Amino acid sequence: MEHRRLHEKMIFLMSAGAIGIIFLVIGVYQAVEFMDSTAFCGRLCHQVMYPEYTTYQASPHSRVTCAECHVGRGSDYMVRSKLSGIPLIFTTLFGTYDRPIPTPVANLRPARDTCEQCHRPGRFSGDLVRVHTTYQMDEKNTKKVDSRILRVGGGEAGTTHDIHWLIGGNVWYLPMDEKRQEIGWVGIENSQGELITEYIDPDKASELIHTDPKRIENEKRLMDCLDCHTRVTHIFQSPEELIDMAFIQGRIDDSLPFIKREGVKALDPPNSSLAEAIVKVEAIKAFYSISYPELYVSEGRAIEQAIEELKEIARLTTFPDMNVSWKTYIDNAGHQKSPGCFRCHSKLVAITGPQKGRVLDASCDSCHYRVETQ
Image (cartoon, rainbow, N blue to C red; front, side, top):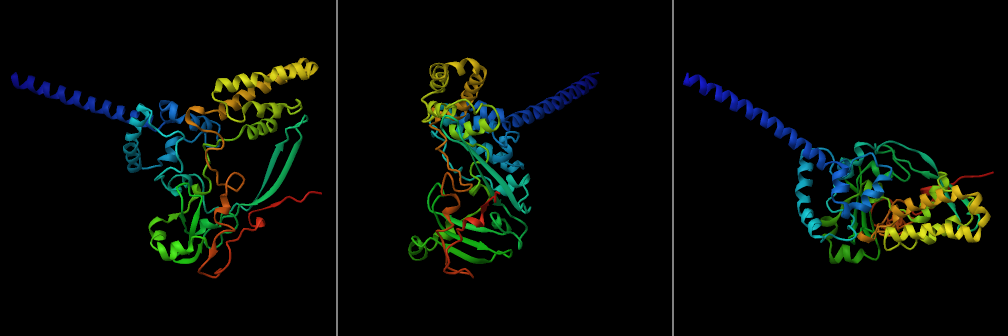
């Protein structure tokens, strides 16, 4: 009898233990899943990540989770990211984090493990039409259209050319500053990993060749997508750019006189708080009631819609707590907002290979050309 009771207790304890382990595994799995969610990254650390989370929601990658880009696949990187994030918990609790968050992000996982899980680098894209539409800040919000053909190019090793020619092999570069805007040296390898061409900044040549010859080998970086596409998701656009986009998409009526001028005046320079920005936007109603009383009555609905859209633009551009504006972060895709392509092109000179003695090509037609209009 005693043996039977002991046997029943053992069965009960084993069953309870098994059930407990199952619930523990489920709980751990759900906890890990939550820690990889955008809600955890964007809302739990609301104060710190508010600007990034806000612009992420309006970005081309808004349906891609934070972890897919910042962590990528694989348990080793997941564990590594969680461990490296422990010190950040304390900086968040005590409010000692940097304002703004510094970039580029140190030790970011290579793009081949994140971006290239969706984007195929070897695909040849050819030439693509890009239409850049802007509006002036005059009474008629005069429209200006600039159409260009981008030589996106790409392709497999041995055939790649145009803007994305570098994906056909390994391109190494040496950043001379923390922001990676000053490039001192570039080395290009062939498919066998042999260095075939080197370019150098003539102003840095003496330092890199004679004074500190080991610096290139010790500090060089393998160029990938994010060295040019630095703001692919957390895109901070200016009020002027966002108002132009609202015109294009019909969210603001471009027939409202001076609406762009008044919108930009309310939001640029950045306000000290979102509440202040909203008050300035609301004041645009008074501008129309005084300057255009008849239009204020006849187009009241369009004015109200414009005001609401400008409030949304204020939300996307006003981040005083983190000292962030549309001028804070560098976007190297192109050369409109930063040196971009010209960090290397038109600046570096070949010191080895078939191009020896020549400046790295900076011809505009190498990357884009205007659309011929009749």
